Image 1: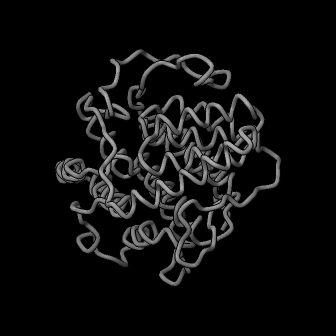
Image 2: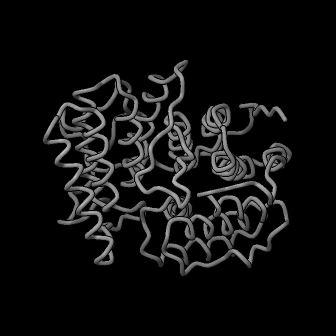
Length: 328
């Protein structure tokens, strides 16, 4: 069915801007209109970011086999870059491979170089915006992703190759869907659910497969519920069925079925999980309790999520943002 979201409801006060170190010249060039940010203390050696609660965040240790594979991937990406440092694809893959290791600041620098060399390439802003979310620089992420959205407006969409392919080897996302997904996410993480709605609509407009449908529907549903727009939220769930052929985003699919009453919340709740998909489920369950009037239970669950080490996962960042808002 066709769905529209009216942008006339009460605005919920957003989380205070999450800022990292101030932009340091052209190596971290930002598009015009980037909001001014407050200077925060220098990061401790080895830290990638400060959490929204003020704690330094360090890359998590990786199993030896994973570290070795990632080192090989970076070596290949580096060789391709060295062979042609101006090649946009080589820059993007070097930044992506570095980002997968948790070295988000280094990845941001690579994409910043790409922006200097290819200022009209939306992919550079898309990927830098993603990694700025990882390091809790939401306003900067919004500036990057908004700029990326402007660059692709009216253009044909394109498949975005997977850095970590799924079991079927079928890419499920596109450049435009990823731009709108991460832009909406940055607004959501600030608590600006109202502004996030437009990006959810923009994402829905380019949705072409079940994985995209469940990814956008999960966050869209939560934003509408947080705004008290329950009828519109229920409409978001209508196309979601248990029979959808979801390849990657099974965590979002299961959460949506829970929202429909087809899976019990207790069946999904597992705060001990460390992988991003599991943390996303844990946040979705905790948030479900929150907008259904069980604030104390939700807060306890958010805090349980933060006992884990998967701080780069979007569900973890969302739980962190909830606790930061409670602190005022």
